[in-house]
Amino acid sequence: MGAKKKVVGTGGELLMHQLVAQGVEYAFTNTGSAEAGFFDAFLTVPGVQPILLLAESLVLSAADGYAKAANKTAFVNVHLAAGTRQGSGQLQNAYFDGSPMVVTAALRDNGTFGDHNTLGASSGFSQMGAVEDITKNRWEVIDARGIPMATRRAFKAAGTKPTGPVYLAFSSPALDATGVEGTIQAAHPLEMAETPGGSTLGKIHDALLNAENPLLLVGPDVRTADAQRELLELSENYALPTAVGFYDYGAFPLKHPNYVGMIDNIPDSGYDVVFCVGYRQNTRANAQDDKFTDTGTIIAIGHDPAMMGNTFALDLDIWGNVRHTLTALNGLWKPDHANLQHIQKRKQDLTAQSQERAAAQAGQAMELSAQTPIHPTYLGDAMARTLAENTMLVSENFRASDHLMPLGYGDDDWRMVRTYGGSLGYGLGAAIGAQLGAPDRPVVLGIGDGGVMYSASGFWTMARYSLPILTVVWNNMQYQTVRTNFASWGGSMKEQNRYPETFLGDPAIDFVMLAKAQGIDGMHVHEPGELEAALQRGRDAQAAGEPFVLDVHIANVGAGADQSWYMPYALQS
Image (cartoon, rainbow, N blue to C red; front, side, top):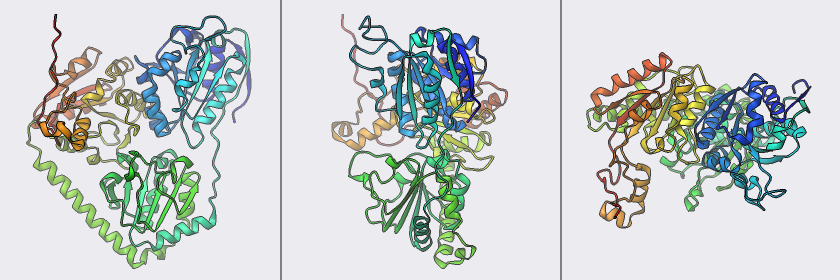
């Protein structure tokens, strides 16, 4: 806990002093006049850099990208109840992922005088209602003297495991108040106990040691706890086939022999032991959520009890800091355990499987390397080979080839930032936040053409703050994920090969022109022979400290790939 100090100033200045005490570097914001008392404090209390984004959805996604890249609690300010609602899609993503952030907005009274105020909550309703189901906690602050205390409480709550976004609504009179005295003192997240239960820990060790067909399932709590080294040691000690969660390719090194794939793409039956480490199941609200029905022993450790045993039942579990638990579990491993015959065989099998997978991926990329339009598999392969080491990949594209990227735990390996909540409009803002959160890493944004159009004004913020982000638009003029899901559903759409409102051409969107209008250079890439030189051009721009956009025209894949139909309409006079 930091030292206390008394401060006298406006309500906005007390808020800014508390942010400085908390070590806040950036205030992600879209300005509003109801928060004037806060914005005035940027001129009188130095230490926090405002980052302006041109829509509240971008503000929230930038804060999420920063929180994940920096592994710190982000700070957000949006405009009243209306601005809160504008950002709610990305706040839902943050809540789904458990991203630590403090989200603030001004609050207008809706009853003392008028009851129908611009941008405010409707009479009889609280502004809290807009965020009730997508925040970890939420408070209204009416008295300016409580601003430091409430803000301190919010940072404690957001950063304490299980982490998540919290919301503070400050009344405009509280922010504007003058001559207010407050106590400034930093808060820190509460620390989970370091020593897990010995009896349960021993049972987990025995189960892993004796398992003939185990599966280790890794989730984002490993990153949150900074437990990558401990997780890797566990996987290697017990020779555990290791899978990642829903598109969470950055959760485990993809080139490691023990890696076996994403849980949605591998069998969820046939194991005698399944060990879930920080895994947050992404459910579809159907019977398939009841996984591992024939597994003998299901184990889970993690930060959020709501994510443990919420669909399939658990036999052994420890709720606590993942790093502490893994450290204690690794402490039970003895060197002679490695000589056990079934563990030796599993190591050999995993190595052979990994080599086969790598050869198959390389062969497929080579086979597709001359296809026009550019095949997405070849684009992913070329990115992995051409772009900088230590890249941070921000991904908003379920149909991209992220599984080909050199993601891992090493100093030169790539890292991934993405959301698993699925609300589009995440990528551009998240890349901005990720670059600010990891200034020494090259940031590459891989995003679909549909995703760009949810958040295209983010290019302006990249240009204003000279953020050297390379944006690769995977442009197939389709909402491809929706189209392929429609095809799986079937019906007349499948029979007629007509998928309503998934085609994004006619007119085609020129993403290079869109970026140039906001101050960023870029280029189109149509032919596979142009791709590596274009990626190198983007890498050179990054190295020179400049953002750059590549509009890469790729092939559609999957059911309906050949269709460009949409329901025509012409306004009749």
